[in-house]
Length: 191
Ligand SMILES: Nc1nc2c(c(=O)[nH]1)N[C@H]1C(S)=C(S)[C@@H](COP(=O)(O)O)O[C@H]1N2
Ligand SMILES: [Mo]
Image (cartoon, rainbow, N blue to C red; front, side, top):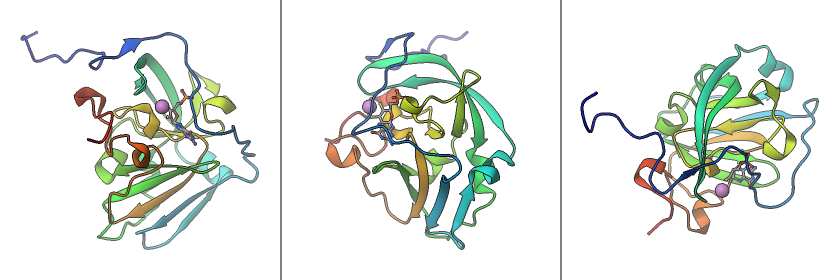
């Protein structure tokens, strides 16, 4: 291994934990899969409304990744199962101006991502964690997982993807957090 080639596994100023903290703003919503729909809209040729049955009929993928929370903890080897973003995006035709997405989570959470960050390997609409259905406090029945960004980008109780032509701040980004949130360069807060 050449010196300087291999990157450390823990981003700067993070500490590794084994327990998995529950963090969110506001209450824990209950999403009944029978009523749940994923709404995809905005800079798309056709809006998409995906039911739980639609989602379950799609190819199911698995990805194991590390969590890096901006509050300073990292958790290794989380095995996520669900629908890979690449498979979902095959159902959507983006308009040419689409450059970003506002991710929506119940009850009123939003977080922004660039298209490149949304399409990044490892990004998954997760329904299972380590082989078990995702618990409600951790975003069950479904959350987005964006492993290469701080964990606030991983919207729990996922309800929608709104494609846009601008990088507008979501909930935490509008409250001082960084628009992009790269843990490796410590993009924690907006300057
Ligand atoms: N819908 C929703 N998703 C959310 C949040 C929230 O308040 N609402 N908080 C975010 C933040 S700040 C963090 S750190 C992670 C925490 O996920 P966890 O509770 O599974 O550890 O969820 C993110 N996703
Ligand atoms: Mo957070």
